[in-house]
Image (tube, rainbow over all chains, first blue to last red; front, top):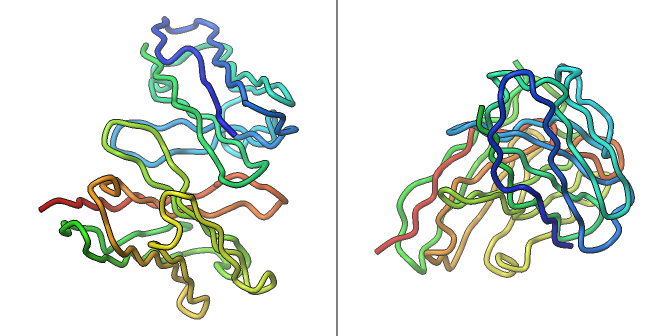
Length: 105
Length: 122
């Protein structure tokens, strides 16, 4: 299953609402997770099951979607949100990741 | 502290072998499926493989790109995960992460190690 993220890069200002899209090449129900990764660090889980916020993740992050189209929204962008964001499908093997969206503040 | 710590990365020649280790701390390692994920320099993430728990007979899954060359194993008594990599090629050069799969069915990877760099070069 291929995951296509868009955009691949975005630049936004502090306080902006930001949306990243992840499209799956076939239906994956709600078995989708979102991670962010900062340079030199491991990925960090933000959202799972398409819309469930991982414990400890700020509430400005939210996820939605099912089937083949999913979105990650940051309601009010903060300086520490500068990172690359990846979606991942957990529906079937091989597990796959999207190509990433680099968010610049 | 709950964490995963990888080790064993380094420089290896094409055709060579390397064994990575991942030590788990602060949680019941035996309860979890465990994963390996790699990231090529400056590029995205690629899932490498999974090993299930004892209750699922420690069965494994692999990405097509490593199947037959890489072997995932675990030692629950040592809270450790391993990745044996054989017949390495330059395309295997990457940072290798171990990750814990969350317990719910088809759960995400909720804990990651810091990564260990593997460079395949002559």
